[in-house]
Length: 49
Length: 142
Image 1 (cartoon, each protein chain N blue to C red):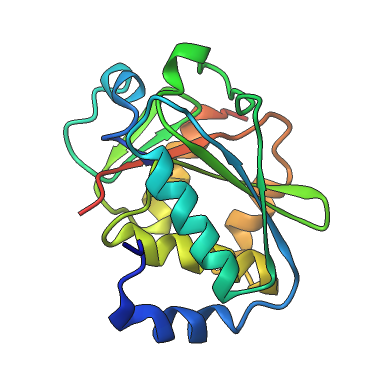
Image 2 (image 1 turned 120 degrees about the horizontal axis):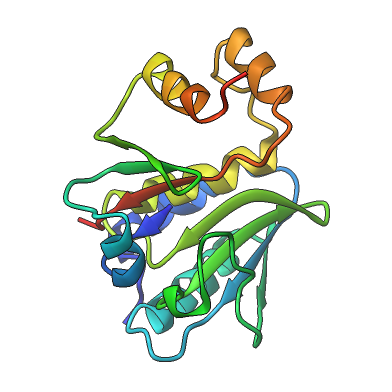
C-alpha cells in the first residue's frame, strides 16, 4: 500500500490520477476497485505461461 | 495530541484484541517527511493498545523493491513480520482516514492466519508462480 501523497516520485512514475491504483510488477495497471477475476486476469497477462 | 482519536480508542483496542501471534512492525522513518512523526506516534499508540505489536524502529533505510530507487523513498516505510518472517506486506506513508481500517485489518489478519478469500484456482495459480509478484496499491488518505 502506498500513500500517494507522501510518495510523489512513485506516484508520478506510475501516473497516479485515480485511486485505488494497483500496479503489477511496475507495469500492468488497474484503476479502481476490481473483482478477483479481473485482477487475476491482469496478473496472469504479466506472467504468460 | 494523540493520533488515534479518543472516541475510537476503545474500538481499536477491542479490534486488536483478536490478535493471536506477535507481529513485528518494522518502522523505517524518513526524517524529512511530514508523515514520519505522525506514523511513529501512531505505531507507538498501537503498541500501547496491543502488546502483540512489537515495534522496531530502524536507522537504516528500508529495503528497496525493484524498480524503486533510493530517491523514491520520500516517506516512512512500515513492514509486518510474523515469527521472524517478512509477510510481504509494506505500508508506505501514513494510513490516515479509511486506510486506517485496512492497516488494522492487515495487522489482525497476519496475526491470526486468516483463511484466504481467493478462489482455489487463483491460489493454485499463485502458488506455482516462479517469479516474484509485486503489487502496489496507491491510495490517498481521506
